[in-house]
Image (cartoon, rainbow, N blue to C red; front, side, top):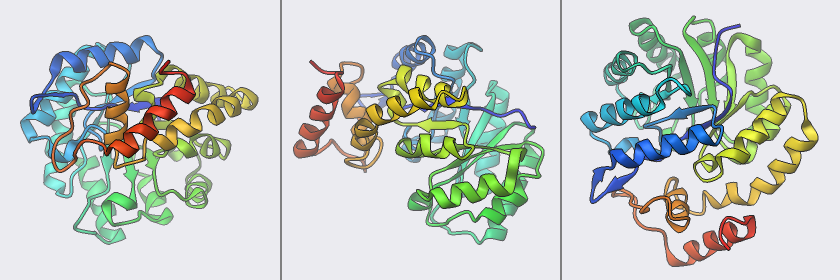
Amino acid sequence: MKKSFEGSIVAMVTPFRDGKVDEAKIRELVEFHVKNGTDAIVPCGTTGESPTLGHAEHKRVVEVTIAAAAGRVPVIAGTGSNSTAEAIDLTQHAKKAGADGVLMVCPYYNKPTQAGLIAHYKAVAAAVDIPIIMYNIPGRTGVNMLTETVATLADVPNIVGMKEASGSLEQMTEVISLCGDRITVVSGDDTLTLPLMAVGGKGVISVVANIVPKETAEMTRAALNGDWKRAKELHLRLFPLCKAMFYETNPIPVKTAMQLLGRLNGEVRLPLCPMSQANRDKLEKALRAYGLLS
C-alpha cells in the first residue's frame, strides 16, 4: 500500500493582521496543533483562504508552516489551481520547501471533463515527485470527480489519497470499494468523518480541528483503533460544533469562533466578510453548549 496520511489533518486558517499575513500567528497555531495531537497540517487550503492569497504570500505561508512544524508533524501544502501550469509551479515550490505532500483541489470554474481531470492530475504527478492527495468538492469547483476517474488516477504511483467532500456517502463508499488500498480516502466534511471511517476511510482534513484539535484527533484515533463506541461518543459530541462551522461560508465561522475564544482576531479577506450578528450569536451558543465558552 502507498504511504499516505491519516487521522486528524487540520485545514489550517491563514491568520491576517491589517490585511497582511500574520507569520507570528502561523507559528503559534502550528505549536497549538503539535501540542494537541493533530496528525498533519494543511496550509493554503480553502480554509486557509487560498483564493485570495497572492502567489508570493501562498508560498511564504507554506514555508513558514513547514519551518514551524520542524518535522514534528507532516505538512501537506495546498497547491491546487484551475491552471495546470500554476498547480505545477505551486507543487514544485512545496517540494522544494520541504512539504511532506500536497493537497490538490479539482480545477475550479473552468469545469474540465473527466478526461481533463485525469490529464491535469497526471501532468502534475509527472512533473513533481511528491505524494499528492486529490480533492473532490463539487460545491466549490462546479465539477464532480467520478469514481471511475478516481480509480484511473489511483494507479499513478505518487497519487496517494483522496479528500472527499462530495457530501455523498454513497460516492465515497464506491471510491473505497473500487480503489481498495491503492489510495487513502479521507473526509472533507467534519460531519461525515465517522460514517466515512466506518466504511474504510482513514480520517479527515478538518475545519473543526482548528478549534478542537485534541477531540478531533481522539475521535479519528479511536476509529482507526476499532474503538467504535468511543469514536461514536466523540462524533455525537462534536457534531453540533461541526455544523456550526458552516453557518456561513467557510472559513468565516471558524475564524469567528477562534476570535470568540481569544485565539485569533477573526480577520478575513474580501470577498469574505465578517459574520452576521444573528449567526455570530448562534455560533456563540454552540461554543457555550460544547463547553468552550463559560
